[in-house]
Length: 366
Figure (cartoon, rainbow, N blue to C red):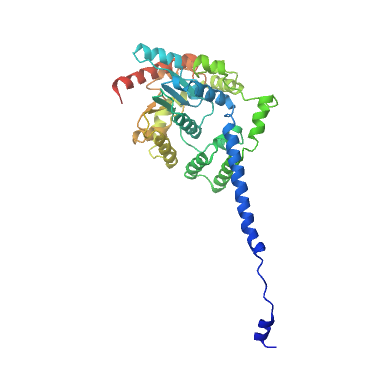
């Protein structure tokens, strides 16, 4: 039989439309399931409270209930928490003819990317009286603490914030192994954020007493102090250890204080990882009737990169108090809890200095 005859004699295979359509149908069903899962997870996530870590949830919930009472809000880490005494600030400003109310939204361990998240949440609520937001300026460094598998880290790692963290991280000179390891850690946290992996069980565990909530300010203390906490009043074993180390190494503290100005002068090139998150933060305030003030608190960190940001005009309003030569009273050992925090006496001193600077800003402008 010829080849042509064989071809003619071979029966044609009929196409199986069901089989041909199965991969496409499976993909469509998978996408529908994923969309339904993420949508449900988003609804659940919106109903969950903020993490309790270090009093973050208590501060947010108290602020939300009283948001329309405040003209001025401070946002940042324990440097804010232990430096600004709102009641003293209000008294000082009232004596200068400026009646306003202030709230201290300082939370231990709040890094720059977390501050940006809190800022966005505050701004989205549009508090009625809010006119000024004072934000602690610190470097948006890739910090290993941001990649820890904690409830607070998972809460932070929404897609937008994760993208911002990775963008800055990729601009920092790290080895490829470390870059890969940190990138994967952040992506895992984002996946947990999107899927609420373990978050509902943790929340239920703390509600029924199976899991102990992390220590932080209680609601009554927040109401009494408007968010301020003195470290000497906090029941924090880690802080007490830091206090003892400080007292045992005072000569090293004195040397560090003496070298801060030279350390600032030695740095002349701006690191590129600072610019994208700074632009994002500034964009949050565009078109809003709000004024943003950046503050560097009185720590032992010279912060040369932040100094460069101000000198190059990238931060239009930066009040830097980490200047022992200009603010020597803030660096006296008797007013310090440790090299990064102030005792209550130091916080009152700092608050009065800030009140004077803020009053002059209101009276004279920039």
